[in-house]
Image (cartoon, rainbow, N blue to C red; front, side, top):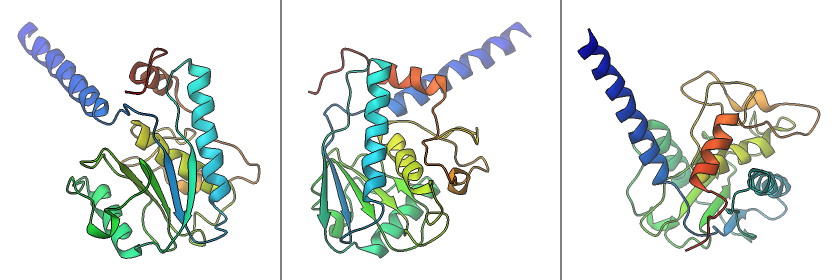
Length: 216
């Protein structure tokens, strides 16, 4: 019985170390510059600014040395079909090739946020071979993105993934998501506010990005 319990305990440790190693692979070694690609005058641009400010405020409060970088806005057509395909690939857990598709190969930011017009599940990609990531945000007029308070939290949620956080199962928290039943519609509110982080997530962020963190 002791042997069985020891084996189970070791398995849990191994699983935890594997999860930590996977998250470490998503850590930033630089201050990531953010580029937002959208139509002119997109109503979600202010939500991007709020989400970035939320994360930088969070890192300040944690005493972390890490920050998200400057936000640049670019008006240009979005390859909707490709962004939809990336969403399907990320959602399936398959990820995608280290090289982004050709029509997404010339990305100006370290994190490029596409404020798309079509319907798909919003997502954050892994790093590609150039240490860049993509965030895709579904159309502003498609529920639940059309509900009040949802865009700022969805964008902050995906930035959380881009920083290195995973989903949890608490519907009152920012990072709740699949495979739990949490969906972005839970962010709906007539009062603008950001959903919070778990204490464990804050501790994890500080372990990834401690006070002495510096860009390399």
